[in-house]
Amino acid sequence: MQVRVLGAAAGGGFPQWNCHCNNCRRLRLGTLQGKARSQAQVAVSSDGRTWHLLNASPDLRQQIELCPSLWPAQGVRHSPIRSVVLTSAEIDAVAGLLSLREFQTFTVHSTRAVQEILRRENSLFQALHRLPDQVRWSVFCPGTICELDAALRVHVIPLEGGYPTYVGPGRPPEEAVVGLAIEQEDRRLLFLPGVGTITENLLEWMKKSDVLLFDGTFWSDDELIRVQQGARTARQMGHVPMSGARGSLESLAHLDRPRKIFMHINNTNPVLDEESAEHREMRDAGWQLAFDGMELEI
Image (cartoon, rainbow, N blue to C red; front, top):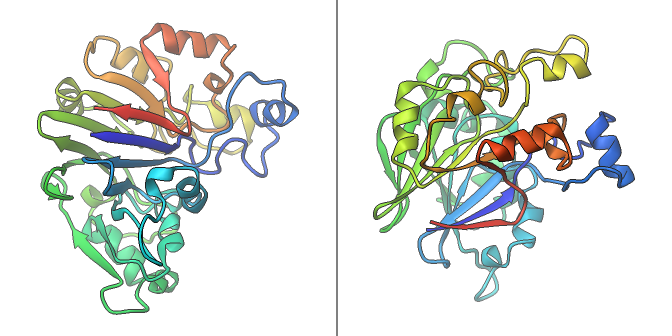
C-alpha cells in the first residue's frame, strides 16, 4: 500500500492566515525550526495508479499539484482519484470536494448523516451534481467494511465525537465521526485524525495495524485557552491532547506496534518547533510528526 500525506496540519494550516501566535509569527519570520503545513489530507493506493483520498482538505487543489502521482495522465480530462472517504462533516474534511467539481466522476463514501448534511442541507455542494452521475455517493455504517477497489477495503470504526457547530441537532451520534482502517492483504493503515477518547476498541485496532496516523491536534488540554480567551479545551473540542494524564503519549506508550505518527497538528502546538522540549519528548516516546509530502510504504 502506498500512502501520501498531502497535508498534516489541523484546520487553518500552519501558519494560519489570521494567527499571530508564537509559532505562526516565528515561522513567518524564519526564526522557528520547523515546516509549514497545509490542512490535513492523505491519499492511498494499492498500485500507484488509482488513488483514494481520506477526507477532502480545503487545500486539496494545491496538494494535488504538488503530488505528481495525482496528476492527469491521459487524454484531455483525467484523474487517478477514484474516491473520497469522509470521516466527518467538518469543514476542513469536506470543503475540498468543491475543488473536484469539474465533471470528473468519482465516489464519495460517508455515513448517511454526513451525506445528508452535504447533499440535502447545503446547496453549495450541488456543484457536484451538474451532470448525471457526476459524483456517486456511497453510504457506509460504523462497524462495517467498505470496498474501495479490488485490493483496498476499509473498516469503518465508530468514534466518540460530535457534529460540527454549523450542524443542527437530532442526528445519530454514532454517525458523526468515524476512524478508518485501510487494508491491503495483511497490511493495515489506521487513520484517526480526530479522537476524543482512546477506547479499548481503538487500542485493539492499533495493535493489529502497521502504521497509525493519529490525532496530534493539541499538545495540552488548555492549549487554546492560553492563547485565546474564551476558547474550549482540547477534549471539549473532541481531541485527546498529546501530553498529560490520559494523553496520547501516556495512553499509547505501551504499544510496540504500530509505527506511530501524529498528524492534524494545530498551529499552536509547540511540537511544530523542532528545537522545543515538547518535540524532543514526542520523539523520545517513539512518535513521528507528519509533514506535507511524507511518503509511506506499508
